[in-house]
Length: 132
Image 1 (cartoon, rainbow, N blue to C red):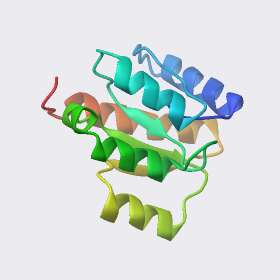
Image 2 (tube, rainbow, N blue to C red):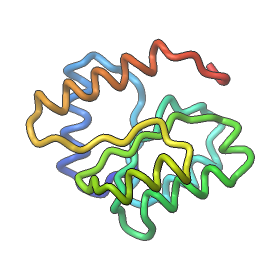
Image 3 (cartoon, helix red, strand yellow):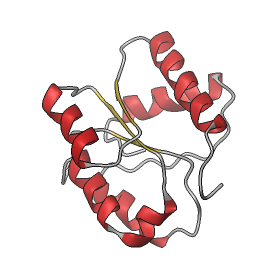
């Protein structure tokens, strides 16, 4: 997860725990840190959650770099934008110019966040993927 807000990171962990999702979670405060991890890890990440507005570069630019990198593109890691900034231009760019699998607005209440995460994780657990 590329997320620079510690409170949002904590909330995400609480929700995953409540949903009994035991996937290992890596938090990166900048796309640059996530980029290094993605290039260096032999692991197949289950999913990437990325805020649109993060320090250093936008989440949109970060996803474009992944799409342009042959080895990372081949990993076909599901990529979800999860952001408080949900404007029509960003959503259109994400779907028309990039290969994203979702764009979700961060909800305010814990139950709303939990409902969204349950749906996202249930979908990706059932979905067929070339690298699973």
